[in-house]
Image 1: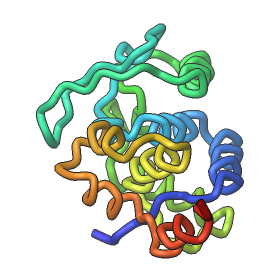
Image 2: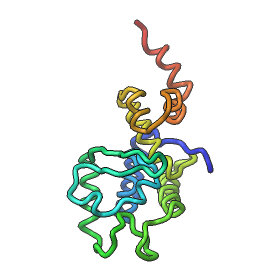
Image 3: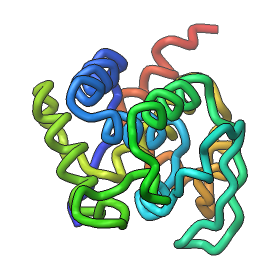
Image 4: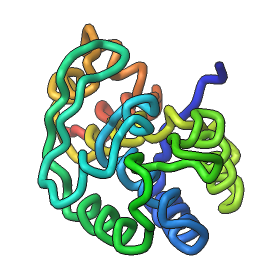
Length: 182
């Protein structure tokens, strides 16, 4: 599996959202929910319509850890969910239904969706489904959320693991010394 990066540029996030919203609301919701929840792709793809319809929170059991994850939905997520649900037929239980039968899209298809969107706006970095989770953590960190809180949200074993995971660069750490000037 290729090592992927978070999306570190808000304009790129907005451009991907615009691209996906214009192509397919399911794919747009996958991106929006992914970058705003920090869920692993396996947990995103296992969501059912009833997990999100008219809900303020998502509650699920993580496939990887077996732990219960319970978190509120942001207004951005709620809007994307409402928009998507208003435009689909409700023949399936799956939130991210495949066009190939009554099942969710595959991890590979999710990768293709995210990667194609990133390439369409000229992102050259390695991008994949895990980029969504990393982007959530990165922007939480950039918005001043304590790394130990992000560690807990992502179920990491130590803050150092979280910092490495977020791809905090040497340059960003050096800027602390340069800009502090007490």
